[in-house]
Amino acid sequence: MRNLLLTIMYDGKNFHGWQIQKNALTVQEVFQNALKNVIGSVPDIKGCSRTDSGVHANMYCVSFCTEHTIPCKRIVAALNRFLPPSVAVLDAKEVPLDFHARYSCVGKEYIYKIWNNEIKNPFLDGYALHYWYKLDEKLLGEAAEYFIGKHDFTSFCTLDKNRQKGDFHRTVKSISVDRCGDTVIFSVEADGFLYNMVRIMVGTLLLVAQKKIMPSQIPDIINALDRSAAGPTAPPQGLYLNRVIY
Image (cartoon, rainbow, N blue to C red; front, side):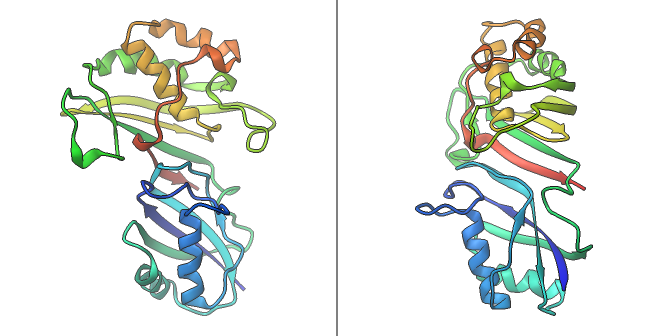
């Protein structure tokens, strides 16, 4: 028996997230179909995270056990042959049998892209939030720094009894807001994330941009432990799972 860890990337624009659903196309479904064509079966596939409809991944990891002897280099080429253009396998390697793509993960990094220009960019449709009004990335960066550290992020979680239980504490290790031309990129690394946590952070920072709240109010929002205290949930199309850390 071998335990394989595969790194993939995908354009989530036309998928309803990673996890298999009955009546919607997901990344896991097309990945499993490709894997069945390559090794003749569908093993128990473990994904590193859930991603919602329209969310992208520059790096996503899956692990599964198999008795198939196909070399790692070969499985990369074979899977890419059967996958659609929107999904690519980047790497494959053998890992210990007790390795789990989700539970062995010690951190993740997400980025959120905002196209900050009065004129829309047709080539970024589905890949960045179009925000018309000028953003002050330094002000947003000042506000974002309040997220750093270990906090109970209940205020930044969409409550869903089927997806979120237990401890809502997470440790944000680094965070930044940077501009490259007309693109503003919000980056955050943490030991884990709650449901919609990054998108709610972005929505709250946009309230800062609109002068509806001050950066110094972020700690009060965190301490409120109340979803209604934070900003709206930003749309999914600007969100990317950027890095998975083991």
